[in-house]
Length: 293
Image (tube, rainbow, N blue to C red; front, side, top):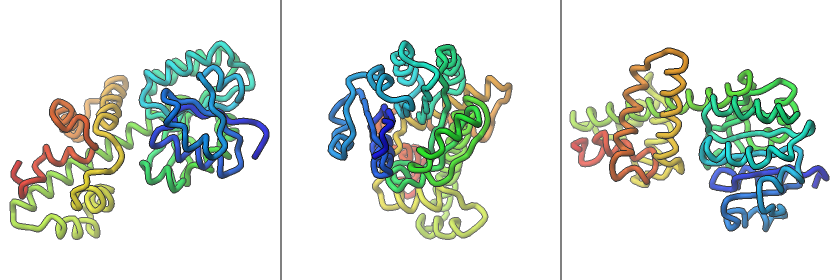
C-alpha cells in the first residue's frame, strides 16, 4: 500500500464499496463512520479505524466524505476545521446542497485548505463495480490532485466547474431521473388500462424513442419483478428533489415538468412509502392493481 493515508468518512452502502476500491488500488485508508460496525468490512480489509473526523484529518491530508446530506457534511467538516491546513484537500462525494458546499469551501479555504465536491451517480451497483459517474466542482488543480483516487471508484469522471457545480449537476441529474421514472410510470399505467401487458410495454419503449433509464433499468430490474429494491431510498430522492427546487428558485426558474415529479415524491413522502425505495413511487402513481390505484 502507498504510505500517504487517505481519509474516508461515511462507510454506508455507497461508501463501503467505494472505499474498498481504494484499498484494492493499494491505498492506505483511515476511516470513520457514525457507527463503527458499518466500517467492519473495511477494517477486515486493512483499513484503520479513527474515533472522530478530527482524528481522520490529523492522519490524512486528503479526506473523502460521503454522508447522507449537507447537515452531516457541515458537522463533519466543522469538526475537522481546527486541524486543517495548506496540505489538506477535502473531497465531498455526498449528494449535497450547492449553496452549503460553497459556504463550507470558504471556511475550509480560510484555513488554507482546499475543498471540491464530487457526487456520484450509478447507485450501489455502480459503487460495487467501480463504474460510477463522478461530477466534480472545484479548482482544476484540486480536481487533478483527486483524479487518481476518483478513477479507482468511477468510470466516467467530469470536471463540471467551480465549487458547488458538482453538487448542482447531481441534483439536476436526479430530478431528470425522477421525472423519467414518474412519466414512464404514468405512461405504463395508461398502457395497462388500455389492455397492454406492462412488460411488453416496457420492452417496446426500451427500443423506441421514449426509452430512458426507467425503461432500460428501473422497470426491468426493480419494478416488474416486484422487488422495488434499487438501493436508493425514497427519502434520499426526495432530499435531492427538494434541493433542485431550492436551486431553481435561487436561479429564478419555475420548473413545470420536473415540478410534477417533485410533487409525486412529496406525496409519497407524506404516506406509507416514505421509508421505502424511491422506485416505489410508481405504486402511488397507480402501477399496482392492473393500473388501478
